[in-house]
Length: 95
Image (tube, rainbow, N blue to C red; front, side):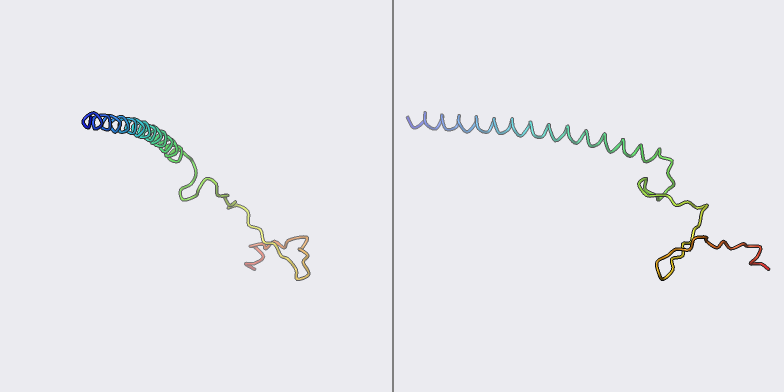
């Protein structure tokens, strides 16, 4: 009877280990699938960044400054702004 009890215990442990191995294998397969999806997404983002026409060192979300227009705003101490900005003429400055 002692041998039969040991055999049953080994059988129970083997079934438990087999179930645990099946669950672990399923989780590893899920992780592998997830990693493949991440690799695909990373390569797609890399292709988009490489093919973008943005200037280097500027992230697409950053606003671009307008290099053609320069505007100075003057605010008086009382909080009012000058109605007509004074424009400097380079010809007048050279005289």
